[in-house]
Image 1: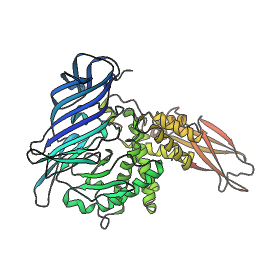
Image 2: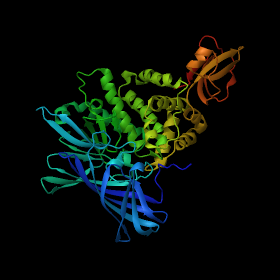
Image 3: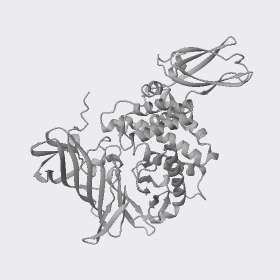
Length: 535
């Protein structure tokens, strides 16, 4: 089925040279973008995304020869069509667009944020939030995750303001009218939703070298003293994830930026992670454990995305669940490693109950579903994506064992670095590393809603029967199964034998199965212990 929201694939970008000049007083910004792209199929129209932008001029260049292009805004479909005077043959093309826009107040795209300083004066900054499909509000682009490209970003700003973006600052030179032109290094290939730039009256901590990566916290000046805890956590997480994934951090620097007005907890922009202030800045001497744990969780979650999401990215928004579920899973592992005494996995068992409550309803949804429009993409950010998704990933790790699971994750990261994937690519990597039918097992959990109840019954002294049935509140009322749904349920079973505990792994894929116990095993006393059903 054709997705009307998807851009055509006849022209594909590879590099953006973006220049932006925001005016924080008037709330407008001017911009130019030069895009290097490749024409894969002859066309007379170059189509890309743009929304709430005014295009003032556009031209194309082929083989060093410029040609004017007629710009047509398709507001209903959030597109900009550039009509060439003649057909573009297959090969390289350069696209130039002059545009302008407004700093909006909707906490999305390139927007206006503010705070009141110690003197009672309002201070204004401009910041970004592009996931899922709001980069198009800041500059014309191919605003879909599989159109990865490199970005060279330049900001022209008032000389008194601080400015930051995804990569290291390459150079800063004076510009007219008390401004300066700040050029940032070129990024790795990445999706448009990960691009970020922030400018305003902000302060920055001195950089800390973390195995070659400069690490800083950016915040409003009166809250800079609340940065040390975040820096400590981020140092730990950078090293933890580099070791876990067996691959160095993919960016050239890492800034954690506290934003006064922010719609989410945080956003994993490569090298320029933005946070709600309360999710980053904290005083350990006065904060409670839940407040500290919240900061650790959020930092760990976003830094896990640097590898799983930024370096390796989903093809399309149906894969958001895996992005977020895996980052949630990794935040638990990192937080547990940072502070084992917090018993983070025990705490996760409590938060997971919210997903169970939703998933018990007849109106629940599968973890992964078809996504057509940007609105449908935003619907994925819920408790089923984060908590249930993380629980399912945890279930798989516990079944395969931590070592085989980690080997499969490393295989996935190394095999798909800088590229885009489908969910099945992860299952195949884990299947290759473990020899287990991972894809078949996991697809039974992600493509249908709900969850099973597993019951075990002893048959004589030597056998047990294991049965599954979908749990639902209606089943409790009516005393009957909700439906005929079945899962491939990974079970680790332990029985007491004369020589000690005996453990085996089985997959319950049918409605029921019978297992023969080892000689001398008993279902009394220590009995049969289900070590893992739902993670």
